[in-house]
Structure formats: structure tokens, C-alpha cells
Amino acid sequence: MSEPVRTEGLMPGRDWCPTVDTARCENPAAFVLFGATGDLTWRKLIPAIYSLTADDLLPCGLPIVCIGRRAGALGELTEWLREGVARFARKRPVDDALWKQIASRIQYVHGDLEDPATYDAIGEVFQWADQHCGGPIGRLFYLATPPEIFGTVFEQLKARGLVTSEATGERWSRVVVEKPFGRDLPSARELNRLVTGLLSEEQVYRMDHYLGKETVQNLAVLRFANSIFEPLWNERHIDHVQITMAESVGVEGRAGFYDAAGALRDVVQNHVLEMLALVAMEPPVAMDPDALRDEKLKVLRSLRPLSPEEIDLSVVRGQYGPGTVGGEEVFGYRQEPRVPADSRTETFVAMRVHIDNWRWGGVPFYLRAGKRLRRRETEIVVAFKPAPHLVFGGRRQGVRENRLTIRIQPNEGIRLCFAAKQPGPGLQIEPVPMEFYYARAFTHEPPEAYERLILDALTGDRTLFARGDGVEASWRFITPILRHWESCADGPPEYPSGSWGPPEADRLLQWTGHRWQNPDDEADACRCS
Image (cartoon, rainbow, N blue to C red; front, side):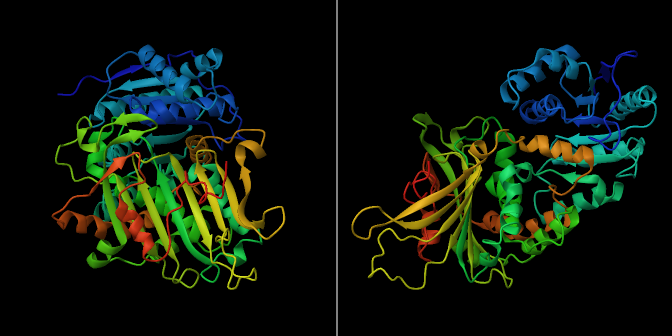
């Protein structure tokens, strides 16, 4: 039997819904957060709400309805959330007056998400809110919950009339769902069927926080607003593309989730393939949500399928073992708490993929992602083809391929490497960089990814959210790899923590004459600071 539902906060008479600036939000709205006592809420969501409020970007008086299973009083919850803001918010230190204003608008519904009484309590909050805001308000539901509970939440919300069929208007309803959206193609299709059976596609916002990062968004501007790049962005001028998403941390208390997912599901199917699609897509007819996502979908559908034999040749997996990261000795994956001693879960993936269309025919894309690697670094490297003929008397030393590096994190920026003559007598050629960094070029810091995406969801902008058909297209490519690994007798080979992954990942490129650009290699990185 589930515990009784308890609701705290927002007593009648509180200044909960003052006048809203409709220029910032189409209508007054409530932010309804399922999974409010989870790590994502603590590290990302409430810190994002705080920073947006500090920048005066949210509608005034935005109520925050928190739903969670953790027992405790509202005061305990708000104090715990404040600790997360103090540690993780972009806007720090915490302004006590500002936090008090935000905390006064938090409502806590403590109950089981499978208990209908929980949703009855949420409905009472909405009734009270509509009365005190002078009419119906919009509702942004954020599901920071495991995907297996999505269906229950959707059905209960719909059954009790807590979501409308409107994506816009006075009483709009929108739902943000966190990744992973499915575990494979069949489950993603089923989840899409369930969601769109209750809501329209325009009401569903599938979160991929990487799409909210400034440098990822800048990819379209870099390509389509600069005539020096777009004419070269094809198989005639580009030799290969690398996308690296390296993490120096391990599972960090997420072993229960991670061991059932692995690197391929956790980051490659979503983050890495989304970056690939943005790099490779055709120019959209306009920067509106559907036009942009139409072009990304074409890329994902053009990924060359891999047979079992091709998977063995083109995909490498690994699992981190003991080692040293940042001068500190760390455990191997199987020694982490709550990880089975015989786990076959991959913590590293590298692959060579091809996009079968006119723009990219014959150009290999190298993708890799992993945990406990040497450094935390996410970057996209576009390697251009070498000059067809050198006129320097055969002097090739110092002449390297031109590379455009788009760094997503940390120190977001863009770097172009080209050859130049070293000052002095003789002809000594050296690679030199031209660099742009957000922190140096602009006086104000960019918002965090979750800040941008929460604000977009409140204003109804779906551009940076994944669409259902795009999610299915990425799973269509990934699922055969998962199935092949499940049929293999051997698990992933071990690589030392603090390395750049298993040596098989290097050999993946070597036979084509390429090599990874590792961020700590000064020669590869064009001597960039």
C-alpha cells in the first residue's frame, strides 16, 4: 500500500502569481517537476531555474510544483535544493533574497507516481492556481524520471484532465521527457506510440541537453552564415570528421542506471548522433523547428547500416579498468559500487560510420565516447584534404592538413589550424591556430544548456528538441550493434583509466591513414592553449 499523499506550500493568500511579463512567455505558466528529489533536479534543473530568474528571463511568479517520493517537509526540500543551487548554478553565490522569492513559489506533492491520489493532489494545486491567477494558466510538465514510468505519468495526467490537447493558447500543455527515449528501436517506437496517442507531437519536448550548448547551436551559424566554409563542406574538400565526447569521471553513483545502459545507449545514440547530424545536414529552408529537424532526419536515415561482420570491423567497445586520472588512483568499472563483478557493459565506444548521400559519399566519420578517459573534452574536428601539390621543394615537415576544431566543452570555442612560415631565414613551415573562445569574445557568459532548453519549452520553441522520427532513425542505426554485442561470447576489453581508451580504437583509424586528435597532444591540437 502506498504512503498517503501530502501537499505542502502555496497556502491561500501567498503572493504566488503576480503580473506576468507576456513578452517573456506567451501565457502565465506552472513548472511541474516529476522526479523532484532526484539528482538531475538538484544538479541541473533548479540551478537552471535560479539562474534564469537571476537574469530576469522567466515569467514573474513562475510557480514550481515538485512531485517526489522522498518523505520530508517542504522546508527540508527547499534547503536541499538551495544546496544544489549553491554548488551548481551559473549565477553564484546564492542571493538569499532571490532564493527566498523562488522558494516561496515551490509546492511539494509527496506521493507515489503510480498512485492516482498523487494526481488528484496535483489537480487541486492547478485549480487553486487558476483561481488566483485570474484564469487558466499553461503547464510545463518535466519528467525527470526513469523512462519506464513515462507511460504511467502520461496516462494518469490525461485521465484526470491535467493535460489539454493545446500546444499553444491560454491553457497550453507541454511535456518535457528526459533521455533515454527507449532502449532500442522497438521500445522507442512503442514509447512514441504511447506518447502521441495521448498528446500531439507539438506538445512533446524530447530533451537532449547537448543541443542546448552554445557551441552546438553555433554549428549552424558557422556553416550557413560564413561563405568561406559552406562551399568547402563536402566530400571534395573534407577528408574525414572526428567527434569525441570524453569524460574523466566514472559512473558517479549512477551504476544502477548505467550498467543497464552502457555508453552506446547513454550518449552515442543521442548526444553523439545529434552532433553528427548538425555537422552533416543540408542547409534548412529556414531556422524553424521542423525545417531544421527535417534536415537532421535525412542525415540519420542516410547512415550506412552495419552488418554483423562490419560491426566487428568498424565498432570498438571497451570497459575502464583501474588507473590514474588527474594524478588520483581510481577503481576499475567492475570495482565500482553496485556494478556486477562480471559486467559486460561498455564504458567506451568508438566507431567509423559513413553517410550515404551526395555531400558525404566516401568521407569517414569517426565517433568515440567514453568514461574515465584522460581529460573531459567534447569536440568536433573537421579535417580538410591536403593540398594536391606542394611547391616547397618537397618540404612536408610542418605541413599538416587544415583542421577546424569546434570545442563543445570545456572552454567552448572554435579553432582553425593552417600552415605558416616560421620567421627567419630559410623556409620552415609550422602549423598555427586562429582561435575564438566565447569567454574571450563576449562580455557576458552564455546560459547553461538546461537554462536555454527550459526557457525554450516555456516559450514553445521546439528547435533544439529531438523529434519522434529522428529518435527512431538513430535507434534504427544503433539497435543492430546492441543485438550483435548481445550475441557475442566476449565482453568489452579493458582499458586503463586515464588513457584514451583501448588500443583497438586507434587501429580503427590507422588502416585508413588517420589518427585521433587527442586534446592533450599539442602537435595535433595545433599548439592551442
